[in-house]
Length: 144
Image 1: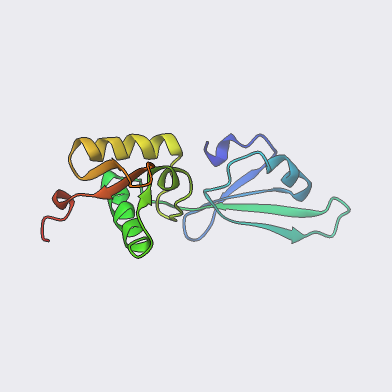
Image 2: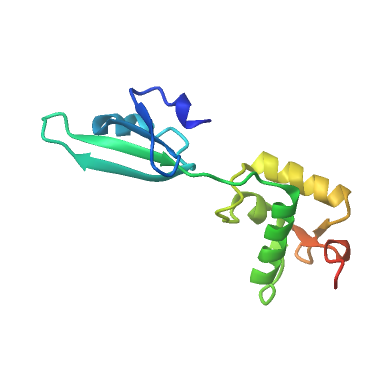
């Protein structure tokens, strides 16, 4: 969902950095609670002199597209994080792994992992405790 899909009255301006900034009444904030604000850098309520409350500003974040290379690097980062405590659980990576750069949903993460597995860069396997896990393969590290 793009920020333009928000159905509350918003004014769109472009700031000095080229970001689209959305401004509207603060009382409309409650309508946003069901909207995806994952692309918002910040939401700020500015004081207003009127009895209407304040002005709401939403500044979308510019993000790089999520590529297979980025997902592969996140799997490697997760492996490093869990190297002393076990393995990277597939379910955890899909639903719980936090990355400011990997802003995609569970289904898209699964699709990209499946593609990386098909390419031989990621292995999806059964861990000793019976849970599905993921790891990078030697093909993902040609220099090593």
